[in-house]
Length: 340
Image (tube, helix red, strand yellow):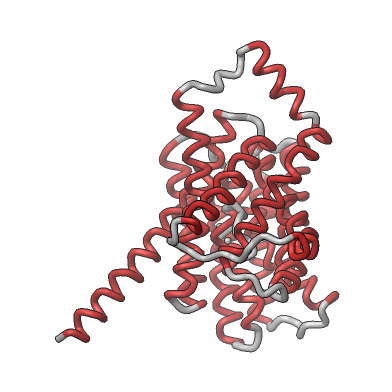
């Protein structure tokens, strides 16, 4: 009788973790778009997210709710290249959401398996993908091309950020994951190092992009409406969900199989599309949405082809890991809507 109760409790705990992850993952891209709409300072917004995540991990560690590796100069120096690529991925992601809708973000995010497959074959001498995998990748590409061709909101600025994001997130998936895995940090240690180092880098990008002038000008003229309730709510929600997806992403990945986690990530993408269409008009045209669904269907077929092959568990795991967090925040990308 007691074993039945234990199994029931374990199932409830696992279901709660998966539900929490699905909720955070499917909402995060929309929430980040909402936040950047109300608070159009991408660099400052991401810095606040880094601060919330790093501080949250440190405080929860002090309270005994979690354990993270101690922050040391030597480890930080070795980890810095990974943190730089992570920062660039988050930075380009936020700027993409600032200039384009969530659907555009999902389309370009869905293109990453195609580039990862090519990069693995060319640079890491991995086996050539199977015919089914190639078919799925070209379905993804076809859907993306159709979406771009019919995107009425196309601007050079938005798609420049989209391509920059695509390059940085692909680099993060192909190269940085391999490097980070050799540091021996636990998952919360990765979150702490990633976010704290990114927070330290934020002022450099504020200066390089000139965003600091906009921030000071807004504060000086009192025209930024910084302290209005809806602005505070949007930014706070973005920061809280960024930290929450880190917890639920890590916990759900441990509680369920890699395949189940990947399936959850795919479902989350569809939920993101549905939620984005229902809550406002910041979405693609009907044909654009059809192309987006076509791209996502290619993603499902891709996951199936990788699962059947069974010979490339690392790429599959890497792909699923980037779900949770790109969307985001990519925050926990060293772990993270693929979601990402």
